Length: 211
Ligand code: SF4
Image (cartoon, rainbow, N blue to C red):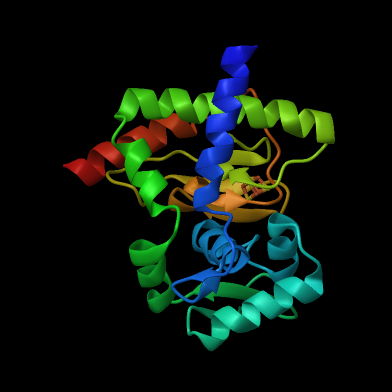
């Protein structure tokens, strides 16, 4: 138990990097959280309501944050391809640049990267396990990567070379999902234990991108 407490206390100290008073590089911590989420979310989750759910804010607060980010040219709204009455939020090149250069979590990201791949995988899996326990207790899950979702199905054989051929289908939204999109965050995610064969497609794509 003292060991567990020590680990949790260290986690709380690490969280100071992303929860802070005032602003850093012109954005408050919630605005950073929103920009970071929108930079990593798939097209189904880049909506004002999904954003509000993810950052734990009301629609009005989320809408204010979107306006702030738009005002700084970090974000634009575009009509949704799936539903013309809805809008999808897009992080601009300027927003991406700001995330790459100034996101307050970048220091933590660099420190975790320095641990090396194996340690990184162990850390990720441990944190995921912890969050699974918390989610089970609170009946919630904010977002996770599409590739582990129970609604993801293979659409057709991934024939041919490279990363462009493997295609998947989201059975919840009844829409195609590309291989690249399976690595993005989704707020409608539901965990599955029976993974689709996506891991082999991802491995193939990683090898193709390295070669
Ligand atoms: S398969 Fe799951 S995670 Fe992926 S888009 Fe559909 S609901 Fe979201």
